Length: 90
Image 1 (cartoon, rainbow, N blue to C red):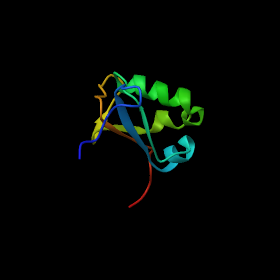
Image 2: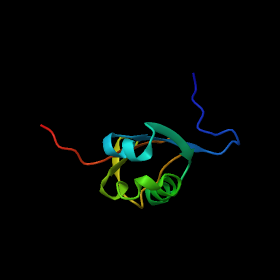
Image 3: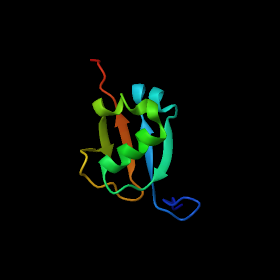
């Protein structure tokens, strides 16, 4: 079964998964959002659509398809983006 990475208008999308405090701030576990060129573009979109992420997301790690990413890194269509706040444990 092939998974579509397009929304109802045919625009390319990415899946964003939130963890721990980022999930609490976002109010959802997972969402599908329009494709962004870079991690910075995506983060800007996420904060604009979910303002409670504003104070949380700057301390989060962002993984694109399992790899740690920074603001200038690309976000390809169909990517899975993980938003991970810092956590303690052992």
